[in-house]
Length: 358
Image (cartoon, rainbow, N blue to C red; front, top):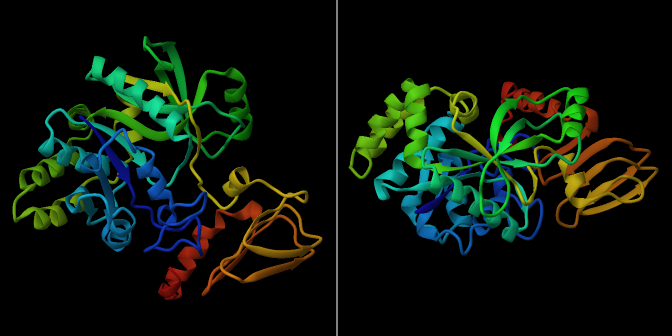
């Protein structure tokens, strides 16, 4: 049967100071009326029952995540004792799925992406499911048709079309890292490249077999955890063995090495909401190029992203090309062209012992 696996272990840095370690992006309401993780779960409504929906998160965020997804069974929350990237995360989930359902097919999704609409998303899932049910050894992923030459997304190059009764699917020719601007423009013009949106669908057994082939050290630890599932020793074994897994992405561990890969052309609009600037694409801009969320009064203010909470008013004069974010205990003012420096700021908070702001 089809299961959903939501990867929800974000560290809460890109949207600082709004996001924190205990309340990262996926637990925030950034677009729409629900939090990102609630939108992700609800996207599967009518397609996947709550009993077959799994969430992989960490101890710091577990309580808040459970509270936001209170309809899911407690056993379906898998708590990583250490952050080890997406390959161990997916392997752990696959092991649990197989312990419940030997024929499990897993739809793997990040918890913090924006997708519209639910109907279109489920159409894409149906296409991927058709592929995997007809070819059980296939690994399928979703590719989004690029709408601009992004340098922040990875790309998938497609090869020949595959036979499906609905939608579009292709063999994969190769994967491309985040490109330079000129290369991204070439990809856009070529018309044979997709954005890699990090959503996958495959049999749980197939992905574990692929990891066994390409990442034997990882599977060595996962096998030990698997034997303890359902026993009183599970937590102890998990805490001992999982941190020993290599910290590797599923893209590098399997997808860039395997041959049995298919890409489904996503029939939905998508954004990974990777930074404060991405809110411009989703919330739009006013006549001065500003994206305003909350209360703001400005004079000679342009090309800014400004977010305030509650009744707090942000007033600006002569400000251009900035990100301004107000929270009750911290305010960020940054050059929009230097948003990556937020990571440096987080490190500086660590170094100066300002843990309460993390």
